[in-house]
Length: 360
Ligand SMILES: NC(=O)c1ccc[n+]([C@@H]2O[C@H](COP(=O)([O-])OP(=O)(O)OC[C@H]3O[C@@H](n4cnc5c(N)ncnc54)[C@H](O)[C@@H]3O)[C@@H](O)[C@H]2O)c1
Ligand SMILES: [Zn+2]
Image (tube, rainbow, N blue to C red; front, side, top):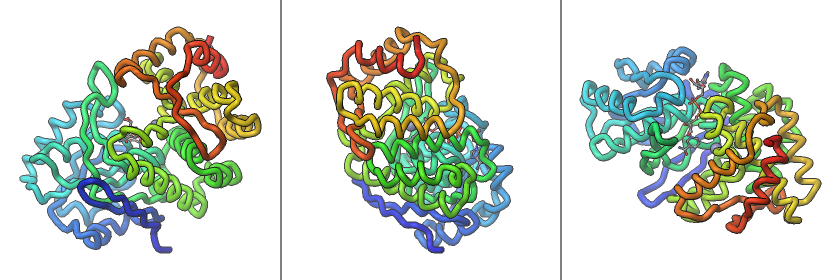
């Protein structure tokens, strides 16, 4: 089957997002088709390379890949410095193409190294987690964490091509896969009732990673993400709807020091909290809240929240707000498939919403 092809235009040009089973094994051909025939440097991490390295021989150009350590801790300036050294050793030039093969960590760190080395090398994103395929590989945000906080250093650097192959997700640990699914649900709630219905109706096949069901689903998520980032490349307005579930989600991650929740799991709770808040305001139908709760419950176990304090979560939310120049932009669903941004959320409402997801 021909891959799904999504065209993303941005201030500095355009790129394609390709979604199709088996694309990884054809990466060299795809690069040629997209005129990315050049010297390439592949960046990945050990677990991904063990699983998928053998399929990528043809794009290595006879050189070993640059492997960064696995996990969120690798999303750091020290890793970027190592990548620069690797680029120097490989005599990378302005024409060199960096190929990032991995989850969001590899994509963000390699993307940032590419954005800044020689003031910008082209980067091809080859996302290998569900989260990276439906979210982080598209939109051009790159960056790393500092000890003081996540994603504090970064750059917008649009990729030259994004290649999503759902077949690469088969070795992904179940929990990682589920974490990505929460973001897929997010797209349904913010932008597409039909995507949401499709997800809820085919959950068993999706969780079993049936490629026939998964491939169009990933394509649809990519289409929505692409549309939103095209409307608002630098996150001044509309792109904020992508933060549905993220205000509370980020707070849960922060107060548990990023150790308890996978990001998507925290967003799962965050979506429930935001939907409950909206419902309490009379702005989100009971049936939709029920449907959202149902799908999140059916997706599998989430980490505990009952030992977490509302007051700590509130502090984290307000700190986030301060960082974001003063106003809390809270994404409220108005029905499944539509949202609005509210800037008048009260402490009392947040408290009730946090209690509704188990905090005390
Ligand atoms: N740039 C953006 O717009 C954006 C958006 C959302 C998230 N992010 C960032 O993405 C990061 C999280 O990404 P993630 O959830 O992909 O985590 P990750 O990159 O840490 O990957 C999760 C785990 O899965 C493993 N893995 C990846 N692909 C695999 C495969 N095919 N088979 C087996 N194992 C595999 C990885 O080695 C890792 O252990 C965070 O740092 C977050 O800030 C960025
Ligand atoms: Zn997210």
